[in-house]
Amino acid sequence: MATFLKGIHGAYSGKVGNIIGSNWRSVDYVRSVARPTNKPASLKQLAQREKFALSTAFLGPLKELLNLGYSDVQQGRSTGYNQALRDVLKFAITGMYPDFEIDYSKVRISRGALANLFVPQWTESAPQEITLTWMKSTSDLMGYNDDSVILLIYNKDKKYFNLMESATRDDETLTLTFPSVYAGDTIVGWVFTGHRDGVKTSSSEFIGELTLS
Image (cartoon, rainbow, N blue to C red; front, side, top):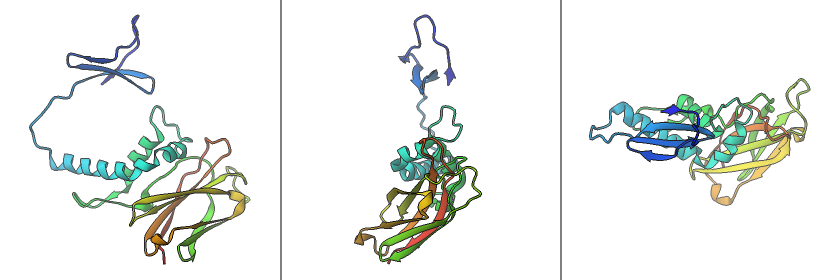
């Protein structure tokens, strides 16, 4: 693939022979048409495809959140979703082909310089109800009392995400009640903070795993 500057007629788009011209995120580029092949994929290729499929299926519902969560990172022309996908592929896939799994403790939902919560902890405070608590820290130079607290929860059994953003750093607590059909399910969670400007974020922190009663 090659990028190029516009000529007097501008950039071209479409297919000419075996060359395709296109544009992505304001960059014009050309690439060759992929050659068809009957050669079977190698074990390494199959493993990489399986990892990619597992990662995209997991992160797919989170594209908007990931674009926010990585908005504080110097991404160049990469989206927050693509940054998160690379992180999952690099750090969070475990096991041997074809039995890959995601290590949720190594998944990153956000990366940034804003201070995260100080000692966040969660418990099941009532059946199908979780409470997240944290402590105020007077030493945070990169945190503000009105920073949003963003809690993401993933139900491993139902493969369903819940997102809550109703508290600020100053509140020191956040409670979320699940429907009764969550009884017996196992959930995992991450938390990060967001600045009022909608751009600065903290790096996310994995807060553990709970089985709901």
